[in-house]
Amino acid sequence: MKFPRKTILFVLFIIYFWTGISLADTIQLTNGDKISGRIIRLSEGNMILETDYAGTISLLWDKVSGVVSDAPVQVVLNDKTSLYGNLQPASKGKMKLALGKIVETLSFDLAQVQAINPETPDNKGTKLSGTINVGMSKTSGNTETQAHHIDARIVARTENNRYTAGVEYNKAKDTGKLVEEDYLGMPNMTTF
Image (cartoon, rainbow, N blue to C red; front, side, top):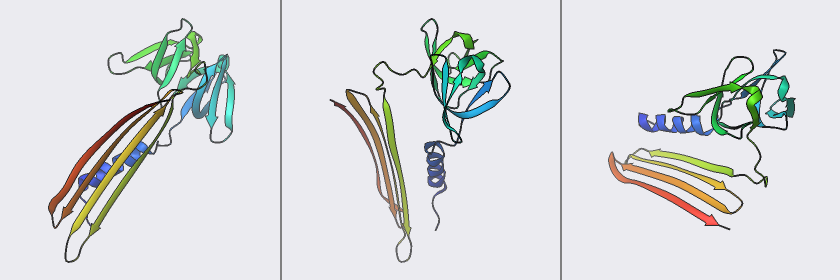
């Protein structure tokens, strides 16, 4: 059973990035300890971190000397400036935020940080969910057929709206001849 190399590479690429490779944020403490987990938020002087080994833990912000994130976070400074990006390694007591391609990084003191991933005032922020499906089949004998199907859907839900976007791709060959190849995009917005 031989699948086209491009199809196999595409499927592996999708699986690699969709499964949320086991990455972790890292918190460096002033005593030198490092704690790995997922940053939930920083508010009122407490850093909330979700760990695999201890569940949700709270750390005093003044005991933190560095933060690195694998996923983008929202950082709010004392002057109410709100920034969004990945936290990168920085010198002790500093924070370095990668914002994007135009402004590569911003560096500032940890003491300037008021919040990370702050809760929305109504505690009902945007909830994201999604799915991805990949299917392939091949039959051989008197006829040679191949079929490939990929679809993905993401849903963003707020208190008043639901935004849905989906894509679908189908391709089929019979005895080496292309018999089907189609794409479909599905945007939708629902207001409550």
